[in-house]
Length: 169
Image: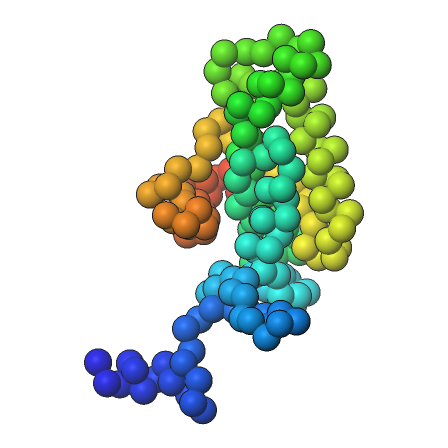
């Protein structure tokens, strides 16, 4: 459609809906999608992928989905890296339950994840920190909650876990 093409090209630029930064070498790095930007109740803009990727660097965390659009604070749904969690608990001499649903309730694991989240939050601006979170009893899956490039399908996760997310607020 010619009108759609004309609409996407403005002032000589092709508007893709991507957000990026130009690095020191002059290369463009895509960091998020404009449609995914969260705007807090205080008007602060948050790039959820940046926060999610930062938190996912913790070895016990597999996936993170951040929410907080039009809210006073951010909350998250977090999935656990089951293999890493089991190995870490076994090395600590903790009895490891067989199901992931029981695993995410082990107090030692919860304490490790909380400590890791506290460390990650300490390096973020206050308005980007995760105030409350819920560990989920299953990991996100490609084709379901994740795209083929492992990006969170925010609308799908929100629809699927809306009751849990609302309780966090």
